[in-house]
Image (tube, rainbow, N blue to C red; front, side, top):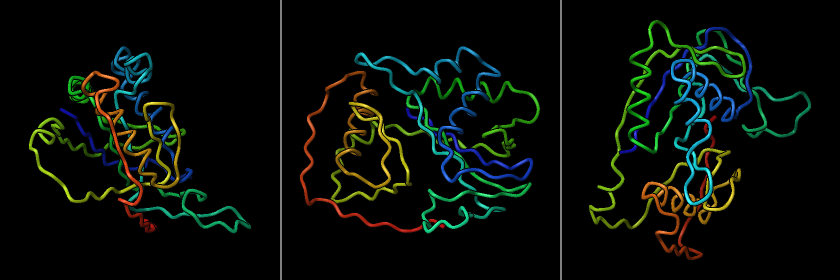
Length: 217
């Protein structure tokens, strides 16, 4: 099972953050876990070795504000892409973040951490504290999806810029949806879940996909 944990966060104070805070959220999440279970925090930080290389045991969708914020750009900047802006938020601003555990045992272990913690849980991003107000859970069985045998004519993928992929070779940041890289990352994930390194032969032909984009701001 893949375990998806969704957090609803509230800012303790006002401040400002870059639009993309993936690395900072990852550090804050590992720090939160380490306060209650240092060994578990080390596993999350270092990952596990598969096929001679380290693989992450979780993925993270970083903090995205839902209310109490605005996006500002550096003075004189001619660019108006979200990734070039900064998010200024007020006390009480609310946002969301999600973590996906690729191994069920680790997801369950994290739930034990949450249940064993007493009092208010706080999450730190670049020195700013956020109260965890609500936690949602979802369990997904990828094997049952594969075994269903259902054939799909098309699939829609929401791609948030920028996104870090962990394909079979190297880690790279892409600011656009690159189908070949996306499929390679899925191949890597599938191989990890099956504890194999070259379990599938993939073929992706040019011209079978369409790309479109829209602003989330």
